[in-house]
Image 1 (cartoon, rainbow, N blue to C red):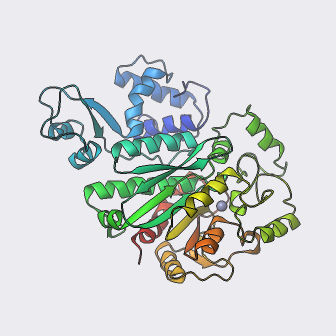
Image 2: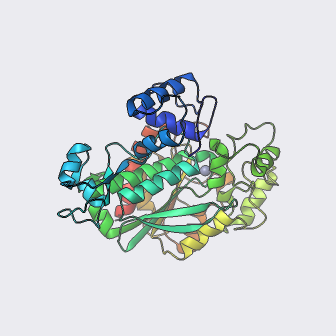
Length: 424
Ligand SMILES: [Zn+2]
């Protein structure tokens, strides 16, 4: 991790502030600006941890913070250690420890071997600008704590970032949830990541999620999470992408002076709206958007030179083609609206799901508006497979929706995410 000190800014500073806040060292705003309050918090943390208290987060301080960020310690077994004792010593849950160490024999821990000790408190922060690297830190932690998860690669972005899929469950019925087609809607990535963490935890503890046993979902369904379709765009909007990089400079150049930069940016990093780039009446979408003046790459609404011209949309289409998903949810912001209609298609069960999703979330069902009626992922999914596909527009306000809306958005969507997986 990068060294952080007074004057630094960006998502890593937010992550630092978030973890210091969680453990009671910091009570200022999570603003991504390393100011005097952050420095004081770091110094206090260093004193408590027996580190040299210089207020600079370098290698050693990151080293002590890392388990708190990851949500687990790596413990080296010494003579007489048992999981039961370790659970008590670290105030950890024994079931979570057992699940994180499936290869270890709890009756016979070997001296010197390393075991994973999940700690209390969550992994996924719900109070920071959720950049692609922070998501990857969380994904790695989830894999360590929940080794039953599987990972696949959907493809690569324009800037060659991997687009990961994480799979929960071993059931025959496959559903797919995606988020952040649009860069400034990155809060939707947090929704999926938090849900993934929560359903994994419920699974290990043998608990229900939204009234349904997580183990039942695990056995019957495989949930494919694609939490960040547009990693480059998200990095631009969250402040992760360096402002001296060519990609950043290009994006700024093609953003009209009337739009705030980079917060208005929804497209992929070369200015194509990924959710207008699928071959589902793409020509219609092109006509509409061109008539509105979106005729070239920009922060919003440009459909691209041809359907699937972009690596991200192409990867999503190929991945969907090979997976036979029964249903898909595409997460966007904003409006508290669910879209589920494309053209004259009427996939079996689509209306029933839509009604249920609307009633458990309080979101209204809506016909697509002419501006966004075509060429989206859900349109293409419905057209290709004649199965239910949904666009869920979370939150209310202007994008990017402030992360302070997270808890409400999550509450509203817990039912949709669970019932889409549980099936009929
Ligand atoms: Zn969107």
